[in-house]
Amino acid sequence: MGDTKEKILMTALQLFARDGYEAVSVRNIAEELGMTKGALYRHYKNKRDIFDSIVDRMIQIDAGRAEEYQMPAEQYEKMPESYENTSLEDIQRFTVEQLKFWTEDRFAVLFRRMLTLEQYRNDEIAKIYSQCIVEGPVSYMEDLFRELIRKGVLKEGDPRQLAVEYYAPLFLLIHMSDNKEEKEDYAEILRNHTEHFMKRYAAGSGEI
Image (tube, rainbow, N blue to C red; front, side, top):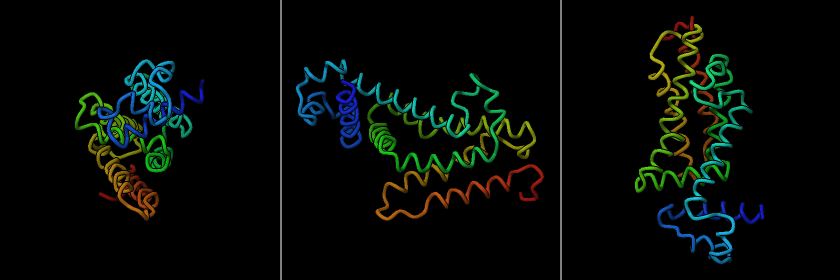
């Protein structure tokens, strides 16, 4: 049963990423799998149940990756000590790994494409897109930078402004990767950005 449920989830995600969530029906998913709608309903209650399972999967993956790279896995209000103990090196390493994840991991690529495609037709999915790809990561970095400024690791400044400046190249490179048949070494570009950023804003740096 587990394998069938996984096949349904991945097939649905592929169709959502290609055609959009709103355009895909349970019948479409079942036909793609060569099964009846009744057989599909034994695993998921409806299309929304499949979608919610996809989102839950991404939340779990995201939390697992954060722990793997010694980054906060919850919002600041839930675990402030994790933000206080995160180093510049951890942030740099995780940033480059996030680029690889969002552009190379099959589930992540399909998930991102689904959200990108559907955000213009579904307000709820637009909010999920913002939380996963836009506003969420910026707020996450803002909290990290605020703690680094408080500890004297980074120069005094507006943590929100720093977060936008730091995250913008990652966001851009993720989307640039979608349209390149032969990808440049975007990871190296991003790595250079993170190193320059940290040197520029590190406390005691002479750069402006």
